[in-house]
Image 1: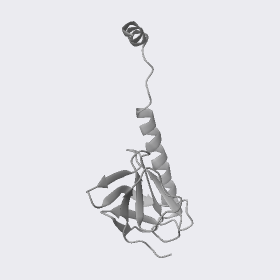
Image 2 (image 1 turned 120 degrees about the vertical axis):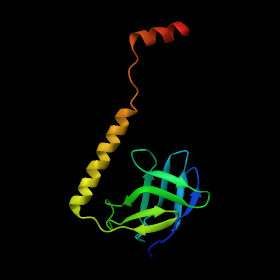
Image 3 (image 1 turned 180 degrees about the horizontal axis):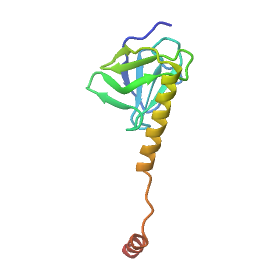
Image 4 (image 1 turned 135 degrees about the vertical axis):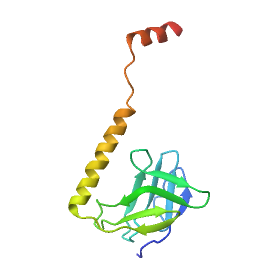
Length: 133
């Protein structure tokens, strides 16, 4: 396979069993994107959409994902940006940089999960809820 230089958006509920090279599948229902690694290795890449992970921008024609896609778990360890449907390659990261990025990502994900964790209701709030029902 050859490296991808562009990705076209394909809005779908679920991903196909076999992804096409050059397609960025976007499932709004599952808040997830998927594509074949842009280096051409053929591995599937899944990017969950959330404030702590990736955000998607769609201008009616092209898509952008932020931040970059670092495929640290794949043998290729490719690293690129998807901006306005174009793939912009980034430099290769060292093992130490990959570890730092993973640690930062895990901290951010845990922080976001904690911020969105449901808070226990007070006794007064539970009593008011019961009384109103």
